[in-house]
Image 1 (cartoon, helix red, strand yellow):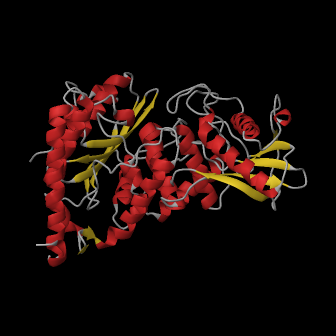
Image 2 (cartoon, one colour):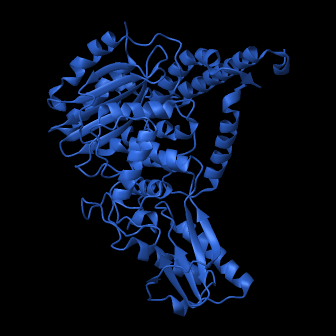
Image 3 (cartoon, one colour):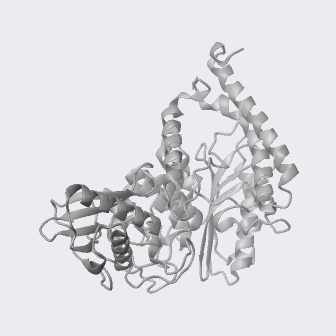
Length: 503
């Protein structure tokens, strides 16, 4: 029978059956060819097992179907497909690929785990001495929002980088998943100047600047204009700020104009030496590229650092470069634990919330956004977006509730806060954890979580799929830790315990 001749529910089942058959073909191929790639194999095996177990749940829960696709999600899926196509054209160094998530928040058909079972399995693991004496923990069912475990869940703790989950939710709520950050070039007629205007995009690359310079040179030629100088504009933020931790390889000066996050090497993630003046460095690179493209005489830029000057309000736009969509930026921030991108997204959240684009403005914007989403803020102190500031505080309850909001099918615009979470044993900051033979290795491919690490602080928050097909949200916040590796192993074991729940 053709799809057009089937009922809506039958079409849904047909789609799922074909997907399961294709998945099995892929698994057979991978078993034959990927044995030596253990990290990838663990992910595929775990995801395949979970996917086949959960596949039969999808149709019954998804609601009305239209041509094999849930009606309520057709528009969102179309937009996502277009976004993935656009991502392929964007040269955003380090941005994670627009692949479909390994774990998708579902309303599982299996029974919700009993709170008593969760407590019996989890409490002994969280009493590991490696986690200190007062670890805060919360576990909820993402479908129902039911609390399954809470121990000091409302007690504030330093989150370290797990606060990036909060940043992700607030930024997606403020900007939407498709918003792009624009770096523009404008023409100052009075001064005969090309003005590079920072748009708060720390992912800007050398290739992006070269393309922008080429577009600018063509625009000048089309207008018969000759530039006498290149200047740069960083007025999008009220001030350039250094993070309270001071000069540090983990983050550059926070400015709306940066080339590859101010990195002085070829890296795209992790710690690296940073430019003393990232905005001037980016403007210098652009001026050189503009001269190479014939948009300005070489003598006007050689040996000169562009001046800093705001573009006139009426300055004509000559060219523009747009970043990847917010959804992709959020995914990159989460998977790479990108501090520079976190602080940039925080400032755009502030601007969208009519607040100044600085630490205080971002904190006020976050608070207002999270309150509007109904999230519990008692005990929270949102002093930065990256988690580098030891004065920041969140609760395990806040983190799990933020995950729950992101999983809400009525809020698809927040989904990247989940799809960007690193996959255990495979990607991002979890790629080297959950390895074969290690404690918690069973959780590889089933746990997706944001890590957090500061001296004496270790945390883990994210989602985990149980054998019953339920997806749980969890947050574990440990302070007073003395052995980071032991603490990480204990946290991984705790997350894995949730993946292997049994009555």
